[in-house]
Length: 108
Image (cartoon, rainbow, N blue to C red):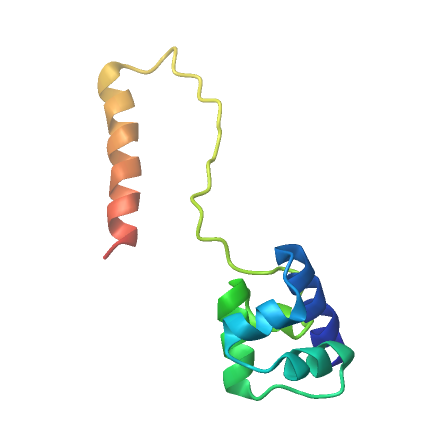
């Protein structure tokens, strides 16, 4: 899990935390964090989950299996140019209704 060691150190440094601050936040010892970062000790599954949740990253990212930190929960804005010159107001209303329909369908 050498990648885990690198990823953990990177995440901790991005937050600007010392090993002690991270350990305190996770409820583990500073020596455990130190050994994880040096690749000398492997965390158990519960600790891996705790670390992933704390940094809001996927386990695959934490283990170095992907470069994508997490699945985004932010809304995606799609910009599109729609030539509406030849559309009537009723047709524009239909487009808006279709968008509402798609959103509603997703929530079922």
